[in-house]
Image (cartoon, rainbow, N blue to C red):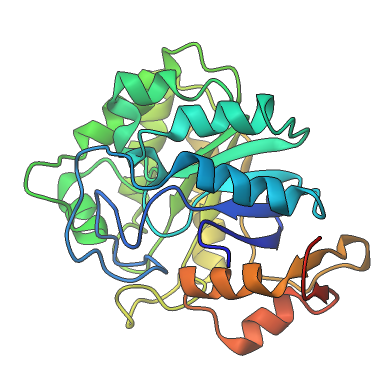
Amino acid sequence: MYKHVFGPVPSRRLGISLGVDLVVSKSCNLNCIFCECGATKKIQLERKRFKDMNEVLNEIKSVLKNIKPDYVTFSGSGEPTLSLDLGNISKAIKENLKFKGKICLITNSLLLANEEVIKELEYIDLIVPTLNTLRQNIFEKIVRPDYRTNVDEVRKGFINLNNSNYKGKIWIEIFILENINDSEENFVEIANFLNSENIRYDKIQLNTIDRIGAERDLKAISFDKILKAKKILEENGLHDVEIIKSLSELEEEKKIQINQELLDNMKQKRLYQDEEINKIFKKVKILKNFS
């Protein structure tokens, strides 16, 4: 029974992505209204060891015998940078397991302000940090933080990452919600910050809600509005801005194999509908067991 590894998911951004959950459900330092894992019942601010590292690595090793993903992606039941094993597991995947693909970290950016977290990014090839706003009132609406958490920590995190020795790629994600952070002023402020601090990035990715989040009445932004956001960001000096499309059907050349237990574990991490699962894996052969 797999507890820590799930998928792999055919991702438009990452190719074939094998998910690895470094925390227990739901451990997060924020309580985002759009989170597909549901609400955070108790906000976790301190980093800790959530799982047995060898157990996690053994699961990854077992899967890699049969599946060769493009990325091993740290995501799942909460914020992966909360795990004190982030750096050790990344290193072990590359050095001990001899994984030839890439490692991706998807993060809400808050703990990038922590120098120890920055040190643990050495073996991570791609970071996808979130930057939805730099305004405290909007930040509070979207992520419902602990009273000790300020949006300035996100700002500091991006500056911290920028000034570090991190050599991997950075794809900044802006998650846009209707009538919350979709104003021109918000996008201009984000652009001004990235420009003024000369923040390094490889892509800016615009995204919106695609399935049920923690708050069920949220509205995805329309394509016309997200296109307008792209234009505003580009007019204000940002480059390589792209729109993340909704889930599309798998192409023939992206056939993958998956273990049923891994699929079941994935369904526990997100609020997937059966129709969506069928669409994701329309052309996928399901393996019942691995050797």
